[in-house]
Length: 196
Image 1: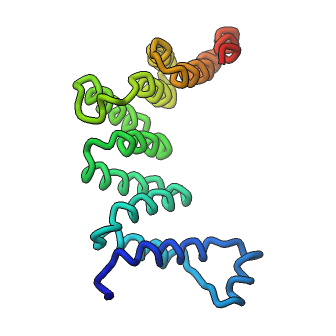
Image 2: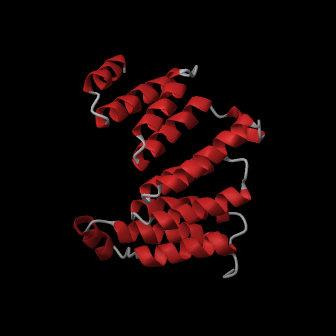
């Protein structure tokens, strides 16, 4: 059934992976009759994402990975944005959008996304209420540091250190150490690293 576009998820992944092989492996695959094309694979995945019924979301997730691998961060961001519109309570997609904004060198956009996540968390909005607040603070700290505001970055990490989850506190100390080091406060940074 050529109109069952969900099948293009499998063929698209196959095409992309086969087209991505290194030549030292690819020549053997070609001799055995296996060929692939990264571009054709992406086209098939895009068709599955746009016209698929059952696998459209899976195709968007895989396209996000493909675009990230190829450093097409805008393409990955767009896929994540489509997923967030479909699943507005999925804070993981929302968090990844902030990460993509940072990869695109757009810290202001990342800050806006993370502040929106924090607002939703504080309002107790759906699944956002389950998110650990310290992890949001850590992301705000990183985005603020990338923007160049080291003192505000240190404040966000300080708030994260007040959290109850050990993992978030460890990340906060490590990132605070990096921030302090950039600010020329090496001894304070070393103290944070030693705590980690």
